[in-house]
Length: 216
Length: 108
Image 1: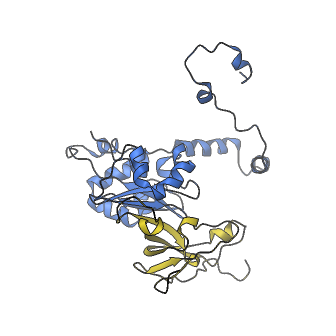
Image 2: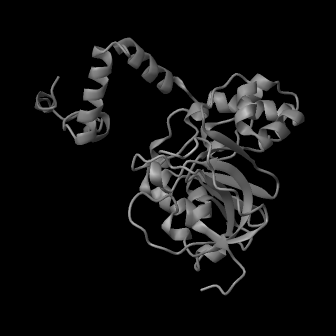
C-alpha cells in the first residue's frame, strides 16, 4: 500500500496516522547511504561477505536486549564478590556471564543510599548496546541530552523518579571510549527471591539511571 | 603512520585525586570535549587507559601515540552557575589528556 492511496479512506477511526505510519527512510540517497550500498555490494560481489551474513549481523544487533544487563545486576545483588569484580572491571564481569561487550570498556556505577547515578551522552548517543540493546528514542533526543547534564533532578522527576536532596545525583557524560551501566539498588522485600526472579525487577531504565528497579 | 610503533602512547600525567582544568579553547573539527565543560576545574576520578585519539581517527589518521583518557569529576554548581540542585551533586566526564592541564594556578 502506498502512502497516497492510504489516505483515500474515511477518517472516522481513532488511530493517529502520523504516529502509526512511519515514513520510509530510504527515500533519499545521501552521500553516506550511497557509500554504504556501494561498499556492501562490492564486498558481496567479491565474496568477502554474504547477504545472509549481513542479515544475521543485523538480526544479532537487534536481538540484544536489557535482559543481558539485568543478569549482571541480579548476580551482583546475590554475590558480593561478583559485585566487587564488576565495579572494578565491568567488561570482565560481563564476560564471566558469557556476555560479549566487544572492545569497549564497561564501567559499572553503583547506586547507594547516598548516591544516585544516571547516564547520558551529550555528544551523540553512546550506550551499552551489547548489554541493553538499542537505545530508546528519548536517550538520543536533544532534549534529554542537553537537560540531563544541567538539570538532572528535573529530568528524573519527569520520569517519575524523585531523588531526595540528601542523596547525591551524579551524572555520567559518556563522551569517549567507556560505556556505562548503572547498578541499581536492590529493592526491599526481595530477600527470598532467586536470581532469575530478581533479574525480572531490573528494567532498562533502571540501568540507565532514570528509574529505580521495580519492586516485586 | 611511518615510524610510529602500534602501541605508542603518551604517558599519563595525572593520577586519581589530582585537580585539573579543562582547556578553554575553540578548535575546529571533530572534538570530544563538550563545550559546556571547557575552562572548568575538576578532579581525576580514574585513569581509563590510553586510546588512539578520536579527534585524529575522525580524519583517517592513526590517532597515535594514544592519548591517556580520564574520568574527571566536577561539582555541578561549579559547572552551571544557576544549578538548582544540592551542592553535593556531581558530573563525571571522560576527557583526554591533551585537553587537561594541572589546576592550582590562577583560574581565569
